[in-house]
Length: 291
Image 1 (cartoon, one colour):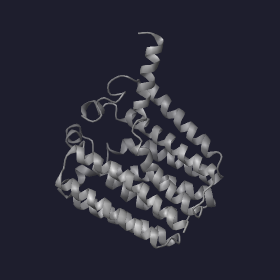
Image 2 (cartoon, rainbow, N blue to C red):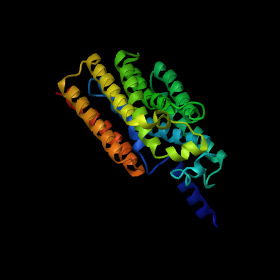
Image 3 (cartoon, rainbow, N blue to C red):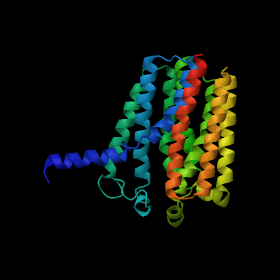
Image 4 (cartoon, rainbow, N blue to C red):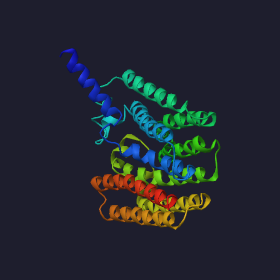
């Protein structure tokens, strides 16, 4: 095999490592960040802040995928959904994946250096949360909660970047995102539950068991409650509140559909649906702030 062919295969493997063709996860990190950024900026954030947080979200989510696959390299070959990942099937070496993780994390950190000191400090917490998440599933049934913390930390950073402080609004959005992420990642974990039980990986899907759909309902209700509280603290109006309630209805409908049709395909569609609804919430924020 010539050098060009090897290079192309490595690039393809890195693309798969960071889930380049599958950006639903990036959107799920981006939405709470943008919710907070737009509210803090009264609906008109600067182009600079938008660019930093959109690009930074992509870089950190990609880095998170790399460290996740490094941590799970011995589990992934035994799970139907993940057995073709580049570390699981040998297309990449651990050292190569580690280089990708460090490079992407460094680029993300370089972006944050254009922001204020508090946001730079907060970014270190974000990197630690992203690095911690993949290892939690070995010791706890609640890695989804840590994922929610990692995915929601951008909301705190975005608020800090605009205001130079941490207020009630980003903390309420952060809390809402923990419940939201736990819900949609529980749905995602349902796809792997049988394999996870065999190899000893823990998840909220396994913990909740037969009560998983009740748990999803409660998680979505708590998500909406904290988002409504964030809207109240941020002075948003009826358009936003209506948007949150409409989104809650969509979330509950997805959970109900999954209960009636508990297949891997339905779980994946439910996961994707969450990424779409998160964007709708941002639309309602934009409309409310610009009325």
